[in-house]
Image (tube, rainbow, N blue to C red; front, top):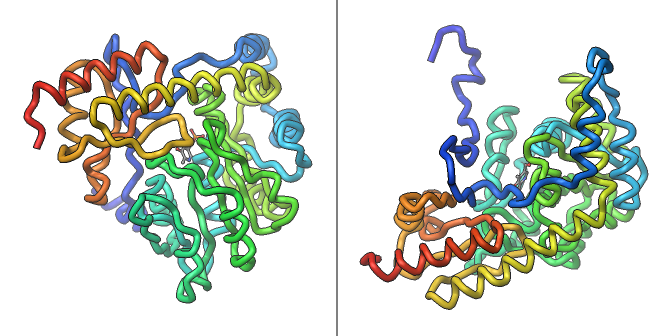
Length: 362
Ligand SMILES: *Cc1c(COP(=O)(O)O)cnc(C)c1O
């Protein structure tokens, strides 16, 4: 606390990212990064950027990258916005599209950055509880008292639960909610979901966000993007150009473009993660864990009668790091475990087998 702080800084409750411990030999299954490196084509593109041109500013519009993203998704370049990680894209979305008089709706259990942006920008929000199966139920967003909203946002699949809302349900939401923006955060869609990007042609209020941090193994490069009707994209450009004209440096633009163009590598890595996930889920169920259905690159799991923090601490003693959440209380029994390599997941199952066998779990 300091007298020099602005009023808004005094009121902030910042987001706390999963830890990035600097310990050797850690099995890191806590922040949903890819266990595999990026495509070789990305590394080549990054090396090619090292040179004298670094004295020049990058392209402020990231035109090549936006063209590659547009091509990959079958949309127009003016239907694409890019940012320094999808977190930055989301920040501009809250500022430019979700800050209205009525509250923004999002699930009570979801990506915990959403309420943080609301705090930063002074946006009212109303958490909508997940149903008893930890699912997003579209009908809950269509209640009469929620019809006047400042917008709706949720990840699909949701985080940290991994559960997926089918496209016909998203479409039902869009049909009933035409007067405010609906943002679908598809950070994890490549691991078993179905993207609703094609729906942007039909619904001018739909914005879909993506990140290269998970399925394209580029969390260290910081690139994310949004697709939507050109009018929505223009709002984001207006915010961006009132904040930072060059959010993506030369490396980010070159590396991300190469990543978007290497469809084969991308598909192969997603397939590997999906098959490891199926094996891990089956192995955990075989030793008594309950695993929610997951369309993401992580699973949400609990051992009946035990506490997520307790098991996570025991895993940590064995140098395996996973994530757990104290709030709200109904998710405190769970752990969110990122899908690692087959070898890492086999080690995890061995460790959990010992933990539930040799420790009295209340
Ligand atoms: C990881 C994640 C993001 C942020 O991704 P970055 O591009 O790394 O900023 C956004 N939304 C959800 C739901 C995520 O899990």
